[in-house]
Image (cartoon, rainbow, N blue to C red; front, side, top):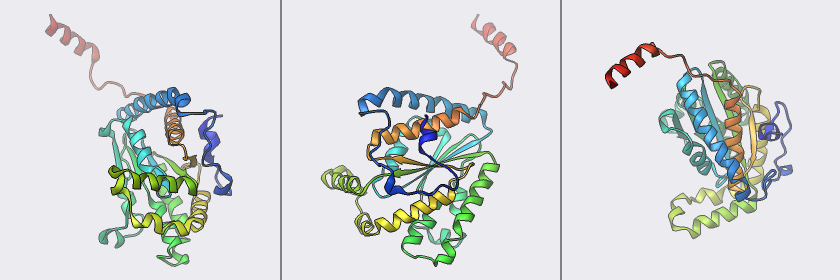
Length: 275
C-alpha cells in the first residue's frame, strides 16, 4: 500500500491525532535502510517538476502545517532541494500585515497561489485562520467557524483552474517537540529560530490538537486532500512527503508539449553549420 493510501485523510473522516503514532516509520527501521528510496523519490521529483514546468498546463500547491519545530523548514529544504528554483515559490505566512488585515482572510493566500507550470509551497497557510485564530480567540467563534466552508470553496476554485493541492500535517508528539527545542538551545547556529512563542504555546497543546483535528477533518476533500505525516523521524517525514508528491504528480499523465518549430529543418541547419 502506498503512502498516499496509508496517510491520506479521507473526506468526512473523524481525525484523532492521539491515536496516530508520530514515531511510525513504515517498513523501514532506519534512515540508512530508507536512503535508496529517498534518493529515488528525490530523483523523480526533479524530473516531474521539470515536466510540470514544460507542460505549463497545471500547477501544484503544497501546504505544510504543523506545530512549532514539526519540521516545515526541513521539509521545504528537502522537497525544494530536488526542484529547479526557477519553477518554484515558497511563501511563509506570519502575522498579517496592516494591508493584509484590511482584506478578507484569504486575500494574501490567493496572491501566492501558483501560476501554470509552477510549484508553490505554503509554510503555514490559510489554515492559520482556523488554528491560532481559534485557539487564542482572535475573532469570535461565529467568524472562524464559517471559514472551513470558505477554505473548501477557495481550494475548489483553485482545483477548477487546474491547481493540484496536497496538504501535509507534520505530526510530532510533545516529547519530540521538547527534544527539538533543546537542540536549538544547544546549537548556536539555530538560536535565531528560538522565540518566546515556542514555549508560550505549549500550554495550548490540547487546544491546538482539537483545532488541527477539526481543520483536517472538515477540509480533507477529493480535490485537496490532507495527509498526516508521522514526523518524529525527520528522514521518514522527508521520505513520505517526497513519495506522496512524486507519486501524485506521476499519476497526472503529464506530457511534454509538441515542438513549436520544425525539428527536421532545425536539424538540417545545424548540420550545415557544423560542416
